[in-house]
Image (tube, rainbow, N blue to C red; front, side):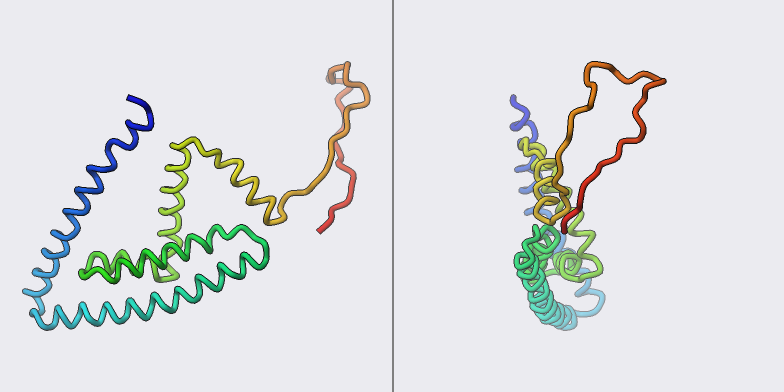
Length: 183
């Protein structure tokens, strides 16, 4: 069995189990809340959550797309902005699904105060998946730094006497890079 098959073999059963367990947990929680506060109040609570979720999603969607457009206009690599746009989309989808668990997960994706946590989880998941597929994340980070103007172009010059290795009494002083930095 190859490494790729070993890593992907467990995903399908986990996704199927989650797809079965989530609706069961949602129905259990709805029944529990319905018994505690009454059926009509539970339905009203779900409707209020849906309206608040749609309002919050639209508000955050506008902010996310605006910051994404601004990043593209600056010529910057839109890492966090793109993740925020994806998380707002995921949060909106979770709010469409009826239930309290999906609403809480949707809030984590939509609220600006909790979105950094969701962004870290999303980034960790994407990085892990990319590393498993053999994508060189170091090259991606270098490309991102270059696009954001964090790379200083320069050149290296050979040592004056490359045949002699440095000794304790002939150790060169701290190396100084001479040049100009252009913005």
